[in-house]
Image (tube, rainbow, N blue to C red; front, top):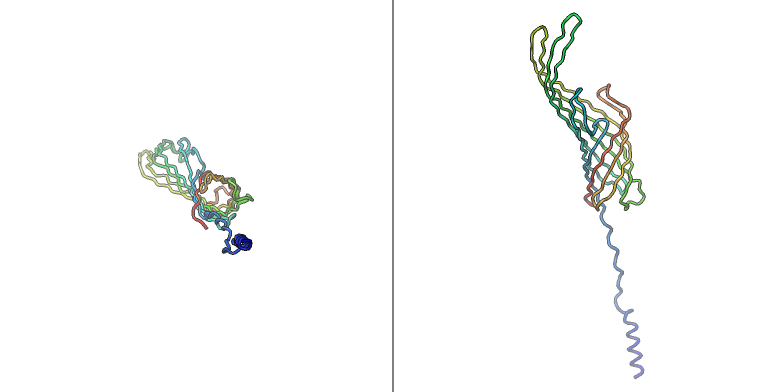
Length: 236
Protein backbone atom coordinates (compact mmCIF):
# COMPACT_ATOMS: atom_id res chain seq x y z
CA UNK A 1 0.00 0.00 0.00
CA UNK A 2 2.96 2.26 0.39
CA UNK A 3 3.78 2.57 -3.35
CA UNK A 4 0.21 3.45 -4.52
CA UNK A 5 0.12 6.28 -1.98
CA UNK A 6 3.48 7.65 -3.22
CA UNK A 7 2.29 7.51 -6.83
CA UNK A 8 -0.96 9.32 -5.97
CA UNK A 9 0.97 12.06 -4.18
CA UNK A 10 3.32 12.53 -7.14
CA UNK A 11 0.36 12.91 -9.51
CA UNK A 12 -1.23 15.57 -7.31
CA UNK A 13 2.01 17.57 -7.17
CA UNK A 14 2.64 17.33 -10.92
CA UNK A 15 -0.96 18.15 -11.98
CA UNK A 16 -0.46 21.95 -12.14
CA UNK A 17 2.65 21.50 -14.25
CA UNK A 18 0.87 19.22 -16.73
CA UNK A 19 -2.13 21.53 -17.23
CA UNK A 20 -2.14 23.95 -20.23
CA UNK A 21 -0.26 27.23 -19.63
CA UNK A 22 -2.42 30.29 -18.84
CA UNK A 23 -1.44 33.81 -19.97
CA UNK A 24 -1.78 36.80 -17.67
CA UNK A 25 -4.76 39.08 -18.47
CA UNK A 26 -3.77 41.98 -20.76
CA UNK A 27 -4.00 45.56 -19.56
CA UNK A 28 -7.06 47.45 -20.74
CA UNK A 29 -6.61 49.77 -23.71
CA UNK A 30 -6.11 53.43 -22.81
CA UNK A 31 -9.10 55.70 -23.17
CA UNK A 32 -9.35 57.24 -26.67
CA UNK A 33 -8.15 60.84 -27.00
CA UNK A 34 -10.65 63.26 -28.57
CA UNK A 35 -9.21 64.80 -31.73
CA UNK A 36 -11.83 67.50 -32.51
CA UNK A 37 -13.24 70.32 -30.42
CA UNK A 38 -15.71 73.18 -30.76
CA UNK A 39 -16.23 76.13 -28.46
CA UNK A 40 -18.44 79.15 -27.88
CA UNK A 41 -17.69 82.17 -25.72
CA UNK A 42 -17.73 85.90 -25.12
CA UNK A 43 -15.14 87.89 -27.08
CA UNK A 44 -13.63 91.36 -26.78
CA UNK A 45 -10.91 93.22 -28.71
CA UNK A 46 -9.83 96.67 -29.88
CA UNK A 47 -11.99 96.18 -32.97
CA UNK A 48 -14.95 94.56 -31.19
CA UNK A 49 -15.38 96.00 -27.73
CA UNK A 50 -17.75 94.33 -25.32
CA UNK A 51 -20.21 96.79 -23.77
CA UNK A 52 -21.77 100.13 -24.60
CA UNK A 53 -20.71 101.84 -27.80
CA UNK A 54 -21.60 105.38 -28.80
CA UNK A 55 -23.11 106.14 -32.20
CA UNK A 56 -22.59 109.76 -33.14
CA UNK A 57 -22.54 112.10 -30.16
CA UNK A 58 -25.35 110.90 -27.92
CA UNK A 59 -26.94 107.65 -29.02
CA UNK A 60 -25.48 104.46 -27.59
CA UNK A 61 -25.96 100.74 -28.03
CA UNK A 62 -24.61 97.55 -26.47
CA UNK A 63 -22.20 95.38 -28.44
CA UNK A 64 -21.97 91.72 -27.37
CA UNK A 65 -19.38 89.88 -29.53
CA UNK A 66 -19.53 86.07 -29.57
CA UNK A 67 -16.79 83.76 -30.82
CA UNK A 68 -17.22 80.28 -32.31
CA UNK A 69 -14.08 78.09 -32.50
CA UNK A 70 -13.31 74.72 -34.09
CA UNK A 71 -10.06 72.83 -33.69
CA UNK A 72 -8.21 69.65 -34.57
CA UNK A 73 -5.65 67.90 -32.32
CA UNK A 74 -2.62 67.08 -34.50
CA UNK A 75 -0.54 65.69 -31.61
CA UNK A 76 -1.11 65.31 -27.87
CA UNK A 77 0.39 68.80 -27.35
CA UNK A 78 -0.28 70.50 -30.70
CA UNK A 79 -3.61 71.63 -32.14
CA UNK A 80 -4.76 74.00 -34.85
CA UNK A 81 -7.97 76.00 -34.60
CA UNK A 82 -10.03 78.59 -36.46
CA UNK A 83 -12.29 81.12 -34.79
CA UNK A 84 -14.98 83.54 -35.92
CA UNK A 85 -16.09 86.39 -33.65
CA UNK A 86 -19.08 88.50 -34.70
CA UNK A 87 -21.06 91.43 -33.36
CA UNK A 88 -23.48 94.01 -34.71
CA UNK A 89 -25.34 97.11 -33.58
CA UNK A 90 -28.20 99.11 -35.08
CA UNK A 91 -29.57 102.49 -34.04
CA UNK A 92 -32.28 104.85 -35.27
CA UNK A 93 -31.40 108.54 -35.05
CA UNK A 94 -32.79 112.01 -35.79
CA UNK A 95 -30.94 115.33 -35.70
CA UNK A 96 -31.35 118.99 -36.61
CA UNK A 97 -28.48 121.37 -37.31
CA UNK A 98 -27.29 124.43 -39.25
CA UNK A 99 -24.87 124.28 -42.17
CA UNK A 100 -22.55 127.24 -42.89
CA UNK A 101 -21.34 127.18 -46.50
CA UNK A 102 -19.57 130.57 -46.56
CA UNK A 103 -19.30 133.72 -44.41
CA UNK A 104 -21.32 135.75 -46.94
CA UNK A 105 -24.31 133.40 -47.06
CA UNK A 106 -26.80 132.74 -44.29
CA UNK A 107 -26.78 129.40 -42.51
CA UNK A 108 -28.89 126.62 -43.94
CA UNK A 109 -31.17 124.69 -41.61
CA UNK A 110 -31.10 120.91 -42.05
CA UNK A 111 -32.69 117.82 -40.58
CA UNK A 112 -31.66 114.19 -40.94
CA UNK A 113 -33.22 110.95 -39.75
CA UNK A 114 -32.35 107.39 -40.49
CA UNK A 115 -30.74 104.15 -39.30
CA UNK A 116 -27.09 103.40 -38.62
CA UNK A 117 -25.84 99.78 -38.62
CA UNK A 118 -22.39 98.37 -38.03
CA UNK A 119 -21.23 94.75 -38.43
CA UNK A 120 -17.82 93.47 -37.34
CA UNK A 121 -16.15 90.08 -37.68
CA UNK A 122 -12.79 88.67 -36.60
CA UNK A 123 -11.53 85.50 -38.33
CA UNK A 124 -8.47 83.83 -36.78
CA UNK A 125 -6.27 80.85 -37.65
CA UNK A 126 -4.07 79.81 -34.71
CA UNK A 127 -1.72 77.05 -33.60
CA UNK A 128 -2.09 75.94 -29.97
CA UNK A 129 0.78 74.25 -28.08
CA UNK A 130 0.27 72.83 -24.58
CA UNK A 131 2.94 73.87 -22.06
CA UNK A 132 1.78 71.79 -19.08
CA UNK A 133 3.97 68.70 -18.55
CA UNK A 134 1.25 66.36 -17.36
CA UNK A 135 -1.55 66.25 -19.93
CA UNK A 136 -3.81 64.41 -17.46
CA UNK A 137 -4.09 67.44 -15.17
CA UNK A 138 -7.38 69.30 -15.16
CA UNK A 139 -5.60 72.66 -15.50
CA UNK A 140 -3.64 73.21 -18.72
CA UNK A 141 -1.66 76.17 -20.07
CA UNK A 142 -1.13 76.83 -23.81
CA UNK A 143 0.90 79.08 -26.09
CA UNK A 144 -0.90 80.45 -29.18
CA UNK A 145 0.20 82.08 -32.43
CA UNK A 146 -1.19 82.85 -35.88
CA UNK A 147 -3.02 85.41 -37.99
CA UNK A 148 -6.36 87.22 -37.64
CA UNK A 149 -8.42 89.20 -40.15
CA UNK A 150 -10.52 92.07 -38.81
CA UNK A 151 -13.48 93.22 -40.93
CA UNK A 152 -15.99 96.01 -40.37
CA UNK A 153 -18.85 97.36 -42.48
CA UNK A 154 -21.08 100.35 -41.72
CA UNK A 155 -24.16 101.82 -43.31
CA UNK A 156 -26.11 105.02 -42.65
CA UNK A 157 -29.41 105.30 -44.51
CA UNK A 158 -32.17 107.88 -44.19
CA UNK A 159 -33.69 111.15 -45.38
CA UNK A 160 -32.12 114.62 -45.21
CA UNK A 161 -34.00 117.90 -45.49
CA UNK A 162 -32.49 121.40 -45.73
CA UNK A 163 -33.42 124.99 -46.56
CA UNK A 164 -30.64 125.69 -49.04
CA UNK A 165 -31.30 128.81 -51.17
CA UNK A 166 -34.51 129.51 -49.21
CA UNK A 167 -36.09 126.32 -50.53
CA UNK A 168 -36.82 123.40 -48.23
CA UNK A 169 -35.81 120.24 -50.09
CA UNK A 170 -35.83 116.58 -49.04
CA UNK A 171 -33.64 113.81 -50.45
CA UNK A 172 -32.68 110.27 -49.42
CA UNK A 173 -29.10 109.27 -48.65
CA UNK A 174 -27.27 105.97 -48.24
CA UNK A 175 -23.64 105.99 -47.06
CA UNK A 176 -21.55 102.82 -46.79
CA UNK A 177 -18.02 102.11 -45.62
CA UNK A 178 -15.86 99.10 -44.76
CA UNK A 179 -12.33 98.14 -43.80
CA UNK A 180 -10.13 95.06 -43.49
CA UNK A 181 -7.10 94.62 -41.21
CA UNK A 182 -4.67 91.70 -41.07
CA UNK A 183 -2.94 91.26 -37.70
CA UNK A 184 -0.31 88.92 -36.29
CA UNK A 185 -1.48 87.32 -33.03
CA UNK A 186 0.53 85.70 -30.22
CA UNK A 187 -0.54 84.96 -26.67
CA UNK A 188 -1.45 82.44 -24.01
CA UNK A 189 -4.45 80.37 -23.01
CA UNK A 190 -5.64 78.45 -19.98
CA UNK A 191 -8.06 75.51 -19.90
CA UNK A 192 -9.78 73.76 -17.00
CA UNK A 193 -11.51 70.40 -17.50
CA UNK A 194 -14.86 70.35 -15.71
CA UNK A 195 -16.00 67.02 -17.26
CA UNK A 196 -14.37 64.36 -19.46
CA UNK A 197 -15.29 66.27 -22.65
CA UNK A 198 -15.96 69.82 -21.41
CA UNK A 199 -13.43 72.57 -20.65
CA UNK A 200 -13.60 76.17 -19.50
CA UNK A 201 -11.20 78.25 -21.61
CA UNK A 202 -9.67 81.72 -21.55
CA UNK A 203 -7.36 83.11 -24.26
CA UNK A 204 -5.44 86.40 -24.21
CA UNK A 205 -3.75 87.54 -27.45
CA UNK A 206 -1.45 90.41 -28.35
CA UNK A 207 -2.15 91.67 -31.89
CA UNK A 208 0.02 93.73 -34.21
CA UNK A 209 -1.22 95.15 -37.50
CA UNK A 210 0.64 93.97 -40.61
CA UNK A 211 -1.70 95.13 -43.42
CA UNK A 212 -4.80 97.28 -43.89
CA UNK A 213 -6.84 98.49 -46.86
CA UNK A 214 -7.37 101.83 -45.08
CA UNK A 215 -4.20 103.80 -44.33
CA UNK A 216 -5.72 105.81 -41.48
CA UNK A 217 -6.65 102.81 -39.34
CA UNK A 218 -4.88 101.91 -36.12
CA UNK A 219 -1.89 99.61 -36.78
CA UNK A 220 -0.19 99.44 -33.39
CA UNK A 221 -0.39 96.76 -30.73
CA UNK A 222 -3.76 95.78 -29.27
CA UNK A 223 -5.22 92.92 -27.25
CA UNK A 224 -8.11 90.50 -27.60
CA UNK A 225 -9.51 87.98 -25.15
CA UNK A 226 -12.15 85.26 -25.13
CA UNK A 227 -13.85 83.36 -22.31
CA UNK A 228 -15.98 80.34 -23.12
CA UNK A 229 -16.81 76.64 -22.99
CA UNK A 230 -15.29 73.92 -25.18
CA UNK A 231 -16.52 70.43 -26.07
CA UNK A 232 -14.20 67.67 -27.32
CA UNK A 233 -15.37 64.79 -29.51
CA UNK A 234 -14.06 62.12 -31.86
CA UNK A 235 -11.23 59.69 -31.03
CA UNK A 236 -7.86 58.67 -32.42
